[in-house]
Image (cartoon, helix red, strand yellow):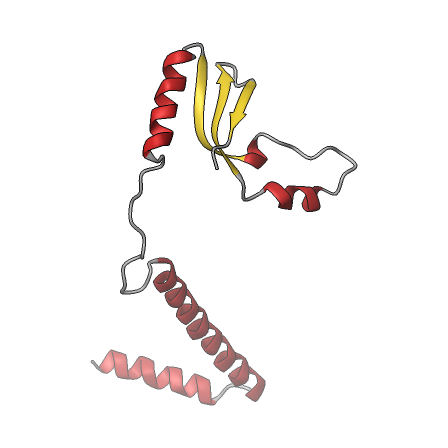
Length: 130
């Protein structure tokens, strides 16, 4: 206990004996440390969703008619791969010289229900039911 009091007394003596600009620097350093800890805590709470549960629920990736068509395609094209719900920008590119962002923005939220590929991923047909 005496050792702690002695260490605390030495610390306060060293702080009081500091130059004024060093005191300001120390206070600023302590403030930034506390601020960074608070920001890290807030980020971790935000990423964890806080105390509430996330508002998501599991859905089937394909509707019943899409499932029927998927199985028909797989059965009738055994030499091919049938991919579902493929983002259109994954199978279409923008030619060089064109405004990439302008043209990509037109398709970046669209998806194809089915993409039929050869086993080497060469695209054969795309189908969109919507």
